[in-house]
Image (tube, rainbow over all chains, first blue to last red; front, side):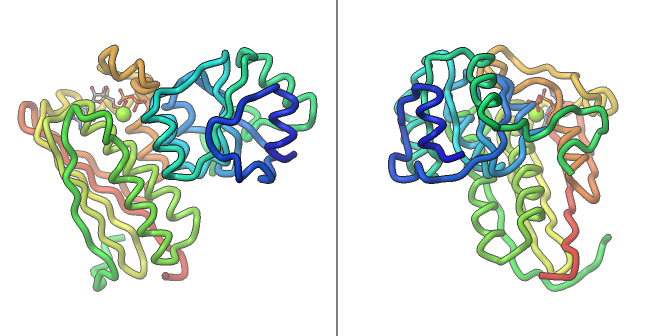
Length: 124
Length: 148
Ligand SMILES: Nc1ncnc2c1ncn2[C@@H]1O[C@H](COP(=O)(O)OP(=O)(O)OP(=O)(O)O)[C@@H](O)[C@H]1O
Ligand SMILES: [Mg+2]
């Protein structure tokens, strides 16, 4: 699925990355806890989150997250936008809550980047 | 694991405690450098992650610190030293879920008590020492298979 399709499904606004919307994504991770993102998210995935501070961008850069979707209509601070522009990480904003955002994407074929964590090596 | 080869890259960075606006900048820089050196993506990823978790901890719990990185054909070595409160009980701090993070740290999405566990999980070698009231030292090695 391309980011363009993601935007359509989520009725999302593009905050950063207008020129990167042809990007393909297959998996996603959702969390409001950066600690969880760092422990489990995989590179190339979408990150669905309700957090909007610059650490979301830093964390995404470290993990090579493909694009960030800010849920619940959250609009980030200018310094968050600036950092995302600098690091070239697309940021979308949707009014859907985290559960709905995940559900709508899943319905259209986006899978979790990990399914469950019953072994300790969910990412390796 | 402690192979003494000539480093292909070495550098030191200073991290200011309490400065959350800059937190993660050093790890970002390290990631760019390791990529440029042509290291495999999983090595770059592990090293960046380990550096990031340590950097966030310095910003969160210490007055200041340094992060040093040294790359040899066989490994990436990252060491951090900070001046700060130190860790009274390392076994407790290493437990998943244990955290003394303030509400400010939690607001940013950190403080789940997973950082040190993550660092250990993604390092091939991990050592932590700490002195109460003085500071904390971490040493992490990530092996590079088949050299650079
Ligand atoms: N450099 C340090 N100096 C002093 N205390 C530290 C340091 N690093 C970690 N600690 C202590 O160890 C605890 C556990 O650290 P850890 O990184 O595992 O989790 P956290 O920082 O609390 O949360 P998370 O990393 O998931 O955001 C911290 O809450 C803190 O009490
Ligand atoms: Mg931590």
